[in-house]
Image (cartoon, rainbow, N blue to C red; front, side, top):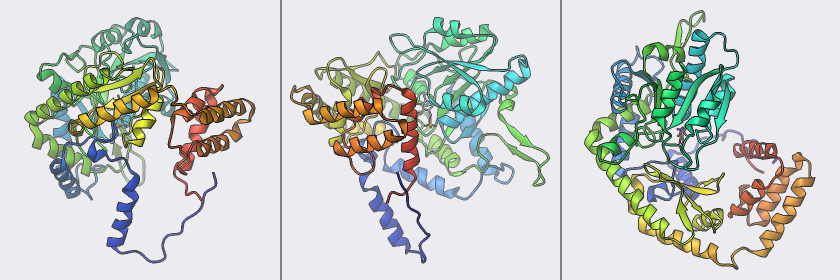
Length: 485
Ligand SMILES: Cc1ncc(COP(=O)(O)O)c(C=O)c1O
């Protein structure tokens, strides 16, 4: 895709005009305020948003890089960490940092394990992390960034980690074992107690990725829901990530990474001592650290308190039950496995769920398409309590349309068949052009993505070489931040 340059405007526009242009730019964004997104945004209500914004802007300019300059930020961060540790079964030894999100927390957990192993197991030259295939791709990113090998282990038929297979995957090079509470794709909690015992038995570190569950599971358990153990109360769990900007409902970007002991956390930190600019300590990935999210998280945790989070969790769990019951009543649709909290996947043995997602998209609902097996992702949060009836009606209508034998247009079938054939014959460098062409023939929106994604997913899924898919997605990523002519 070719791109254009853009000069800075020669004169500035008024505040009113700039803000108006931004409001217009939002027109085609997902309407998360109306519960139309099942991921990405976690929202309670306007009143809570106002509190978050006020707390955030109060500390808009401060920099969390230097806690001695801003004792206020230091207080907020250490209190957020201590409250999170107490929620997650930690004692006074548990310590950590706030980060910019789940990804940074997981990057830190892997980097810490790598440097811990360098000190305690200098004989390991190619460290390995053993984890279920369902663990978040941030681990793969960490492996690429920190030169650690990932050993991805298939999961059981209920999508939870297979402890025996994980045991077999451990080698003398293993430094860290990972489990999710819950995993993102199917919302199920891995057998953390068994996995942590396995790691401990081998003298290894164990990370619970509770990015999704960290701020919901403790409250769900208190409300009486059966939640398996996943936190520091489990012997062998040495670190936990929990995202404030997910079910903590705090402002983005905000997550917490916690370690069982300060000795372990030391391996996370960075200090430069010879720089002419002075001694430079930095606990996490970033240099300058936005203080707004730290302040906003502190404000919200203190505003909601345990009672507030319990109430919100009750609503979320009840909303999840209503949605799941409704989905199971729609012929052809099912929920994969038996997820413990408010994250789940919709699948089907008889319908193409990607086509169902396309139909929902036309009705203004956005659900991510997942694969292996094909399913649609649903993360239910507080805002969805208002839309259960409307969503279930639209989902039933979408499924009914896809169920009709006449649904699949012969023309798109023909286009896909020809494109598939060409994909096998063409050199890789022509593939993006082919995708764009197919996209426009199938009713592309002009943004490079077609309005109906199912045929594109079908085409991508059937490409003979998965390396091609990576290259195609890289092309797409590249195009995302370029101006098109
Ligand atoms: C289980 C899990 N871990 C980590 C992450 C990464 O979080 P973030 O997108 O905040 O970087 C996610 C995101 O959805 C997740 O579901």
